[in-house]
Image 1: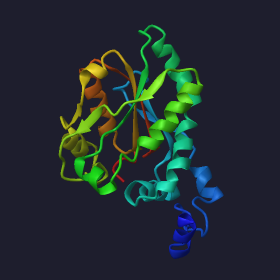
Image 2: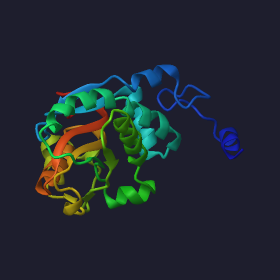
Image 3: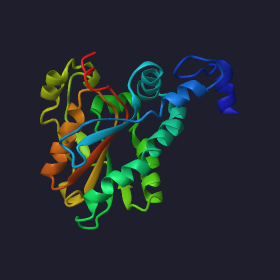
Image 4: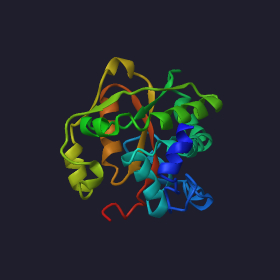
Amino acid sequence: MASSALDLLAPRSCAGCDRPDLLLCPTCRSLLFRPLSVPAPAYAMGLALACAPYRGPVRRIILAWKDHDNRPLDAPLGQVMADLAPVLARLIDPLLRSKPAKAILVVPAPSSSASLRRRGRVHLQPILLSLVQALQQQGLTARAEPALIMNSISTKSVQAGGRRNRSRRLAGRIAVADPLRLAGHPVLVVDDIITTGSTIRQCARALETAGALPLAALALAAVSPGHEDL
């Protein structure tokens, strides 16, 4: 009843194209799963996987979810992340064969304290849980672990302007909360958007320092290589 009343007061429209009466129209939903990879040499797999390119309706959908608290998008965005699990399982299997049998930790890229206060939640949490369940269905032992923290920063990473500036801005600001919980574990880092790769690179550095094995980075969307400064 509350949901129906809210729809009457503020009619729902597609987060990607504003088509009325739909959370996501079929066309925009289809754009959410067009996987691409971007280089990520700091990770054992050597690349990061994203569900879709960060442009057009996909960009609008993710910003509506991330910055405008469109929480009903948790479910479809969680599903597209879960859909990466089969190919991810095949790619990481050779990397784990010679390693001790420890659970794969699925770790969210950290947000600043200001972002957490503004959103009122860890927005990546439902995405992580969907991925963990999908990995478990692939026969992998996996669990979500909020292992990384970010020290105070003054601007959003997507506003920092260029690969070099973003890397300088994040350097040393991402750290591991409890290294003992990570030592020896393979880790998947999950972010919402990969632009220049600075955030996932700093995450890998912090994880490696703590004795973990950064396997791969994942994201809902990524800027295509060569367009990072657009």
